[in-house]
Length: 306
Ligand SMILES: [Zn+2]
Ligand SMILES: [Zn+2]
Image 1: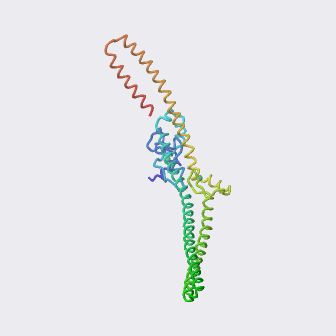
Image 2: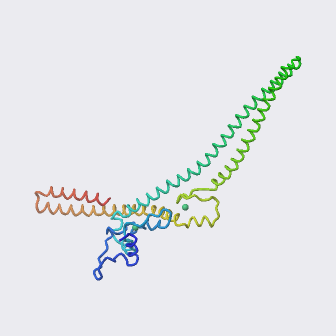
Image 3: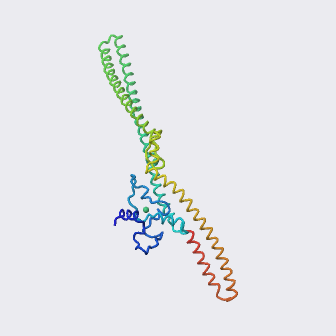
């Protein structure tokens, strides 16, 4: 039977559907088909169903509300390791999500960084152009000066040659002027694009809960839509439950520590009274037994802590 079918049947008929009528077997919390995540919180497969992070169906077929209520009242609660396993699972999911948050925040920054680089490239090109143009202008000034001197000296040919050279240099300078206009236009286009991109980025932010891109200062309706979206709610639920479970596990632990200390005192008392009575009845051979009991007691305590 497919997981889907099994789950459907469980939902329709309850988890005891396999039991023969009249001999309803008692379902154990640790039954291999029980989703223990569901017992202590929720099934992550249900949580992400029909979101873009859909995890498919749960491998455990039993998600039973009445079993969950029974577990909540049971004295086995907090003693079977279900809570810790669930906490680890949802912590892993949250860790993955937080990595996505960082990745997406990086993506916003990188886009802005690239635009800064292109502005630097334009500035460099214009600076180079200016240096070349200044050199040409100096050359033109020099040639014109030369032509004037030659003219004053009556060297008409030499004067004409210098003027011709100066004219060619002026052409060259005009070309540089055209190039500058081209670069400036290109930069203006890029800047307006950059502006729209950075504007876009400035308005973009990454949701710290689910890692999705959101518009800053977005219309309240759209913010509400995001906050009440299934994926955002799923990750918010996980955050809330990490906090709840961590506290719960702490409480179980300190309660257990309290009770095992009480137990220890009780056992100490029993041992003392037993060894007193042993001392009274048979004085010999009691030391090895008391040693054995002591060892057993220590390992008992250790298993309670974990
Ligand atoms: Zn499940
Ligand atoms: Zn979100």
